[in-house]
Length: 389
Length: 78
Image (cartoon, rainbow over all chains, first blue to last red; front, side, top):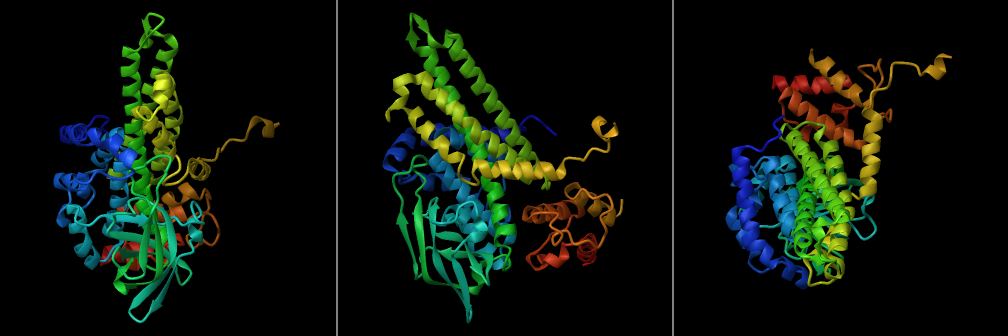
């Protein structure tokens, strides 16, 4: 395992950094205040090819390896969590089509998604169903040569602007995935405002009322919607959220260090205060540790290793939970200046919380990690001394 | 190590039964959860350099060691 980025990966990392500095930092706060993406930013991402990050080059994508894809999420996460979330959901849909879609679906959608002509969004969560995805209430009924979908989805990232949705519905009482185009009759959307964080993520509620989609829009097989299709998507989603958390943590570290260098109290700069040094030390160590967990999960993904799924849980759990302390300390260092909307750290603090809820809450991760650990930890062959006696 | 032994080694990483029979149905037995299904697909694809397609996604292809081996051998032969 190579612990260092390759030259090619570092070139791309610089490209992402330069783009984010030039195009994203200047608009990030404005996007948050307006609760929407800046008008031309999606076109700019498309021009750079970033929307085709995970799409095969045979469909016009960049086909970047998971480490590069993770670095892209880290760099965008450093500036704008709301914008970064566009990549997550768009890539989740692309991955579903690429891995489980028919040849016709791949030919139809992937080239357009790679160019950014079509934006994808992932529609699993419902008003009454979050972590318990098996209990989705949206239903699909087969009629002649099409499916009729009825139901409702909520908290759908990029739901306001997406052109296609990967919708999960019960068909024959089994969770199944469908592509639903945003211009289908019987499909409507309602924007969601007033979120705590991720305010530029263009969230929406989706409504399906006798919405007809052709048979060929089913992705995968009946009944594989959660176990295979959604799991592949969510695995990627968790990885990108974890990498985005590293970027957000890095932003906190930079904001805290820069503020502490400038701010003087009691005739001394804050950076010289030992209590502030402790906070910055903890931030630096936590961010580096989270980054290494992401790289490790990314390496396993590159090898398509089955352990990549659980190592991604570990990375997402660690990276999102570390932000609670890091962001809190960042606001603490900034004092009252960090508690106002005029301060960037106020946004970082709000965005951080969402990361420990989306793509599986921290509590679901605790259950998954514990279950997997219990299953795979070797049982001891030796009897404890107490039993020998 | 032959296909059967490699599959058994992987499966017993999750089902720690030393004498797991080749025909024991580990989904019906409640030994594994649904996440195991995807881990199994990834293992098969990586270890045996084959692609598991939608048409292969029948539980009966993955529920015992012998069924998994038959799937792998069938796909390698084709």
